[in-house]
Image 1 (cartoon, rainbow, N blue to C red):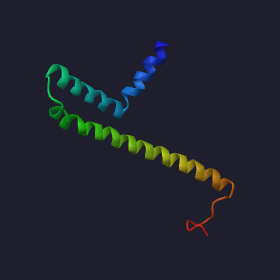
Image 2 (cartoon, one colour):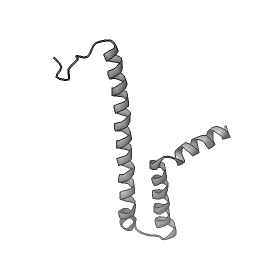
Image 3 (cartoon, one colour):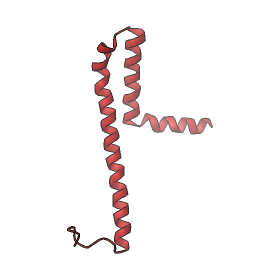
Image 4 (cartoon, helix red, strand yellow):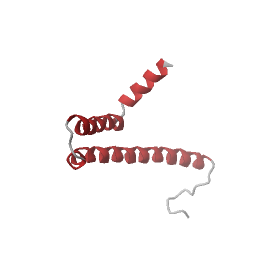
Length: 89
C-alpha cells in the first residue's frame, strides 16, 4: 500500500500543475494563517498561479484530444472509411 502511495506522490511531484497548486496553497495558507492578510491582498499573487494551472490543464486536454484523434484517424484509414483527400469528396 505504501509503495503505491509513494509512487503516486512521485508522479504528482513531477506534474507542473501539482507543483503550482502546492505553491498556491502554501502562499494562500501563509497569507491567511501566518501573515493574516486579507483575500484582496493574497488574490493578486495566487490568481496568476491558478490561471497557469488552468492553462496547463487546457494544454494537456488538447494534447490528449490530438492523440485520440490521431489514433481514430489511423484506425479509420485502415478500414478505408475516410476519403483520400481532405475536402471530403
